[in-house]
Image (cartoon, rainbow, N blue to C red; front, side, top):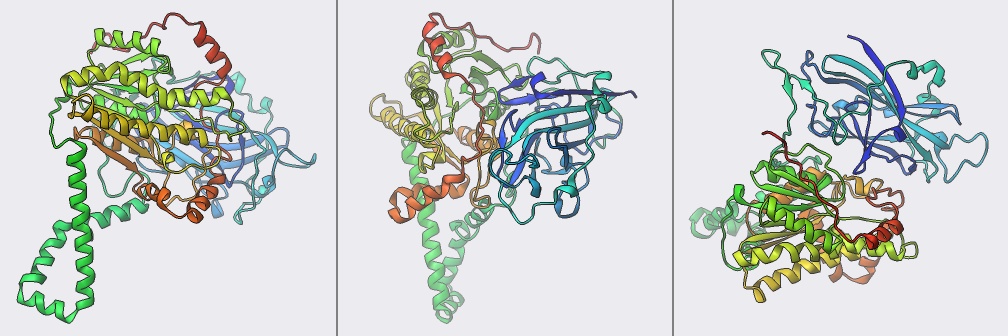
Length: 603
């Protein structure tokens, strides 16, 4: 089979919804081109499934489509350096990393974290001609087979090593990971064929592949496959504090397990004898049992109260869900799970879809910050799809600036998307739910609603406002609209690995692990599928953050200040780069842009 070589820089390729599409299966989620990098590690996030189109390893060796390997280098013609980030084999002390295709099993996105070598330690621009800091390229080399044809491609992403890098104690020596740097002429990539950008939105490439271990080779064309909601003890994030809390909830604080022991101790002769022999242990056991019982009863009563002591029935194939910001990220996974359940799903977004929609998913390009645009699109939704019964207000933005850096338009845009859009969508879709006394409104807020840290003030304000909106809506449904069966759900999730929070620093990975977007989507949809009002808090330790307002100032002030480094290297995706032009164009628009429905011509 022929070997085809292609090379280009990120500027030549398609960037959609924060994802950079390459000449190959890999899709780059982070970093973005031109990002100044620093911190303890360089972090590269690669989707190695072409947004779910390619199966994950292990591959059938005879499959027409698979990834042989992906290697990553960091090079600069200015400094003459060519560092190995990963070449498939881990070196001593992980100076260069191992096979990234084998990391994070089951995850379509591989997160490469490589400790900076010692010659890049410093802060700011190069301070001398001999400095190795400055402009670099992250070079992603893909060796893959597509439909029985092998390819080797080189994809370069320009970044700069100009942010602060401190000595970490395990920084590898630069010479130990350095390689000879070939000239462009020696690489001679231009002389070879170019496969072009693959699997970007609108690309019609069909992948032929076989399932590993199959008895015979059967070529399969890709179709959208949704993984079921994850219900195991160990989450996608691995062994974290959540696992311990979940285990304690199922055992030591499970009243159904403790009650038989309590009854035996209370009403049997042997039990009474043991309590007399071990009074301290029995006293502690009773305390745990009463605490578990109170916890259980509190949860049950809370569920009844938030749902108006009423029940309702959802016929999922008859329900219509609207998901804002559903073209990718958390919203995209929510859309997939709802569609898999049989719901008709409407996506409202100004970004194009980043995955192939099934026949019951409809995409409408819509600026939800414009009530006029939304009203026109809502009218079209009712005519073409039907009257929505579930609304998921998921769309969100962040600017990542300090108070003094935040412009008036930065603040306006944050609140337009994160708060005022909730008013717009609810005004459009809630009245029909009230008339039927049936429906659900999901508000995606954040743990930032409870904890504000530097460079996230506007974002935290907007999420606090979104949470207040949820609380007020819940009260009005009962007291003003007499619609107790219209459910409300609030979501408070922590840092999630989406393009919106690229570069976010997580200093508590065990108690507050970085969440996979699939995990957050699981939590949202798991609550939706109960058909009941409720709250989703992820990770579970986030419940403690609720108490911050009640804690002494000496602790809460220190906790907020401790977050000073969280946003230092943040380079999150900006759906709208030029806000001046964005708002100027909005003022000129008199007619909403015609929307598009993505429905296959045949099913």
